[in-house]
Image 1 (spheres, rainbow, N blue to C red):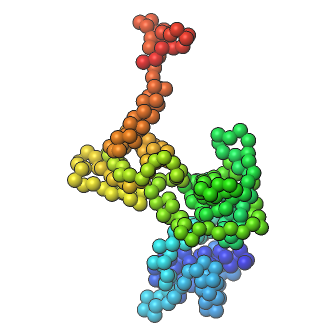
Image 2: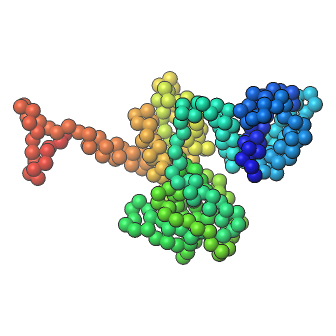
Length: 324
């Protein structure tokens, strides 16, 4: 597909999506001002317009229809909202179109980097589509050297600017997480076929977890946290987990209590700690104590040395400074 046509499809999708309903006349007006209109045509030719509609349906699965009184609209918008991949695609296309329209602003629009995703993502997606195993060379952060083995990808997940692959591997039927960053040294599609178990559902697999660390000794349970009210809007606008519930009867003007049903894994603990003193774990008690231990360890590392009246630190029996 020629890049110019792809960009046109993106522009047309985003234009209609942003307006909800839009007439062909208004589309032509916007097309005349678009930087993609290199010939400066006063309108998008009717035949070209409908060819673009057909190509968009074939390529993206996005159906553009016409309402005589309201204009053109995306007919399957509800399906797109329910489909995480297509929704992400729509958002990406919208940003791509925005950057195309305002190229002179690119140095003032900053993005978060997703390490190595472009290098390995397409290989794994193609393998998943073809039902083929992927041979990877991988070195976890706590491994002294990389290992090469065959994996059978189940799904991909984006979490905190990193793509992860959930897959089983040779001699291990338990799905495991592999990051598509510097830990992945190589990934190559093989000719070996495999099938994902029919009962596997990617969303349900991660349903009881925050992040990508799953299958630990942490069982899904009720977790309650108390959030200072100056941070409540942040939690309401972007819930930490789909199970998040606000407990009005346990909240007051100082704080709000939220309830979750999830496994309090390492990823969730890191997220709680990242909010500092604004968030307090209430239950379960084991998770609260785990957080307390981590906070105590952090506090001990920031303690000042105990000094005498002259300001000279005391030295202990191991010739180390004595801390508070």
